[in-house]
Image (cartoon, rainbow, N blue to C red; front, top):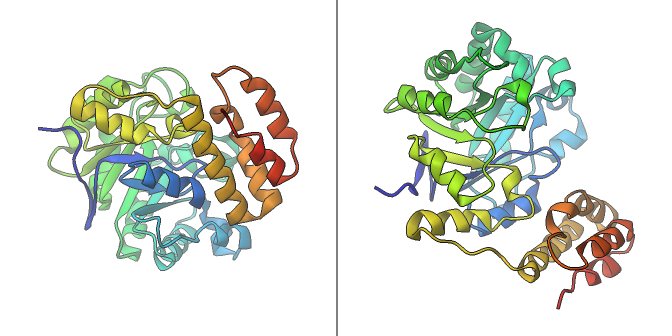
Amino acid sequence: MSLLKPLKIGKLTCKNNLVLAPMAGITDTPFRLLCLEGGAGLVCAEMVSSSALKYGNERSQNMLKISAKEHPLSMQIFGGDVSALVIAAKLAEEAGADVVDINAGCPVKKVNKAGAGCVLLKDLNKLENMVSAVVKSVKIPVTLKTRIGLTENNFLTKDIVNLAINSGVSALVLHGRVASKMHNGPVNLAELSKAAELTKGKITLIVNGGITKPEEAKTLLEIGADGIMIGRGAIGNPFIFKQIEDFLNTGTYTEPTPQERIKKYKFLVQQNIDFYGERVGLNRSKKTSGFWINNFAGAAKIRAAFVLCQEASKALSLLNLK
C-alpha cells in the first residue's frame, strides 16, 4: 500500500496526506497558494488569537481572509478562554475555512503567558472541555494540534490521544518533540509510533516535527500515521511536497537548481507585493530571504542587497539569476 494517499479529516477529503503546517508570519495567502500549487494536500493558516477576534481586532480579522483558490484550508486559532475560542471558530467557519485547528502546542512565551499554547497541557480536563465546546459550535471539522508532552521523560501521548477521541475532534496533529525542546533535536519516534497504534481505526493522526527531506517524511509515515505536516522544511523549498510525492512513488527525487529556487522566490515576492502593497509585501519577503537566497556563488552579496532594497523593481531585478 502506498504511503501517499488521500487524507480524511471528518467530512473533508484532501487529495493527499501532505500538509503545510501553520507558521506565524509565514503561512499567509501568497505562501499557502504557492504550496498548494507545489503539491500540498492541505494548507494551514498562521495562528490567530481568539481573544483578539473576540474583541474585534482588525489585524486579526484580516488574517481570516481566504482566497477562493486556496482550498482546502485549515484556520488555526489559539487562546485560553473557551468563549473566545468558540467565537473564533465560528468566525473561521464563516470566513470559509474547511477546518478549524486549535493550537495547544506552541511553546512561545508570549503565547503561553496568555494561557494558550502548550501550557494548556497542564490541565487536560480543562483542555478537553474547551476542545469539546469548539467541536460543538461549528459544522466544519475541528482538529487539535499539540505536542507529546511538556518536558522530556514526562510524555502525555496516551492521555492526549484519549482527550482527542473523547472531545470529538476529527484529527489529532501531534508534534514529536516536547515543548521544552522547542524546534530542536530529533522527534521521538517511539512516542509517535505509540500514538499511531492508539489512534488506529479511531481518529486521523497527522504527525510533524523536523521534516526537511523526503526521507524523513517517509520515516514518519512508516510508523503508521495517516498524514504528515511540513513546517520549516517548506520555507524556501515549496518543492518539498513534490519531492516527497516522487520519493514515495519512485524512491528518487530531484533537488531544485538555484535558478529554479530564485525564480520561485521572485514569483512569491511579486505575489506579496501584489497582495500587501509594495512596502509591506517587500518587508514580509525579506523575513525569509535567508531560506531562499543561499547555497550558490554570490548568494550572500545578493541577499544583503535585497534586504536593504526599498524599491520593488530594484529588489526584483536582484533576483534575475543567469
